[in-house]
Length: 172
Image 1 (cartoon, rainbow, N blue to C red):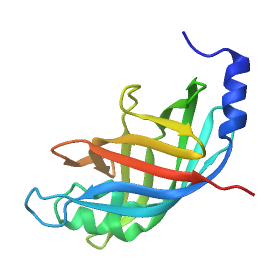
Image 2 (image 1 turned 180 degrees about the vertical axis):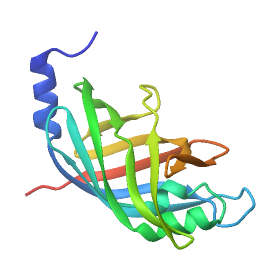
Image 3 (image 1 turned 120 degrees about the vertical axis):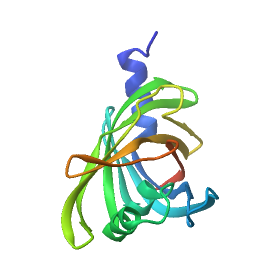
Image 4 (image 1 turned 180 degrees about the horizontal axis):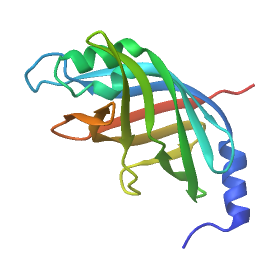
């Protein structure tokens, strides 16, 4: 059973605003399977009771589990981008949200040619979610294993990319 409209509005009023912190991800820096923890600063804005945006997400997060390759180089060089989300409040105390990142795409220079890079995220209530308590927002999303260049599968990672966040609410 979900929250009532009044409970969703209460949760949104508490959660809305800007958050600053870090995204954490495992990076595969060599051709072997060794992963090292990496992080980068990001900002999140909870805009409405159904939308959220991550700002300044580094593109290297999307290819972190890919072995060094032309694809990894091209996507990493893209830089920072935003991810739009659909959200739904599931609990009030602590506040819990179901988060559904929308698929992303942008153009990359791949071996001297401009190609459209695309990837998506899994929507899974068990593993893709966020919790907010005392101004600290913790979140996890899961990137799909499949990445496309101009509509063709370029890579199918050995495992999904679990991306985690820890941010603090900006008080103004």
